[in-house]
Image (cartoon, rainbow, N blue to C red; front, side):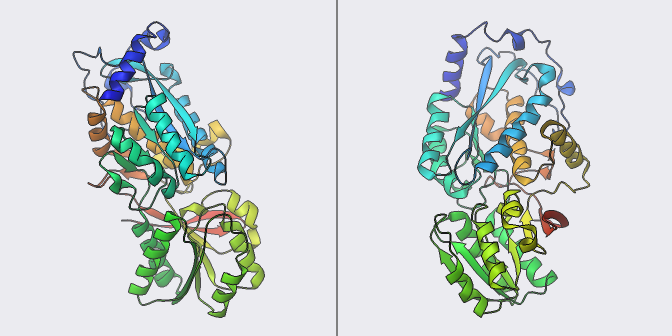
Length: 409
């Protein structure tokens, strides 16, 4: 409540500066539908005097550093929402009042300590009503405790490590969790690809990679498969994987599981290919960025698989409308990173539009009660702040990831 009160004070100091929203004719709830909200917004409160003229959503993302491309996807997703809000001059309706929505991007530089500072900036300087991001589990684990302590709702876009939402009841995520992703990968590899032996190369300095190694190994062995080699390295500064890959090659596994960050994957794929490793390569949703095929090369990637939250080849009507809209605004088709950024922002906006009292507590409760049809499918949350959503299997062919199948939770 204290941060929203601070927003009210700031709004009182800038009355008259945002007349563009204030003068817009308010639209009834049934006229605000953007195609992703499952129900009408709540009726306007009799007293909306505490609602400010302008709000800020903090978007914490890697705009520079090793995962900078993912940050650009976030900006491109916000550009689509800005386009959707043009008819209302960038405003949404909160308790019957037209309110300007700003999204402030704060860079993590792909570093945990910088992420903590970024969260602090969102909370203390920007007075953000909610925080979206970042993608990385290790970075979210560094920053989200600050938001939990301050009572500011958070939706991480791509942090799949299950410890993220265990931080507290203000922390949510737009993606599935590592145990599910690891289960999907192991089951598909064993049952559909016929892999009976597997090897893993992962960064033991990264919570994301570690969680995915553990969940894949546990599920693959439970199915009857054998993990014949588990090789490690200590973080993204490592560039030479030949020693680890040589040990893996000696075991001749059917499958090589590479659950690492996108910036680390291309070198691993190139070095495995150069060594003559014939195992089918498979990775998690971190592979779903254009830098992986662009840097690794189409030939080295050919026939490898990865798990994702979304495919632009989906025949879902909401998904196809989103792909069309995104491509019109940005000139390329969206993958999972942009899609989950869009969905996280829409979930926050939906929660704001359904407020009946202006408080962080009710915004948190509204997010927890989300029931929306979004590009990746119908989204609801379990009691732990994790969405109930499907995964998709993708396969690289000629340097492009193509949809294979969907796996329900």
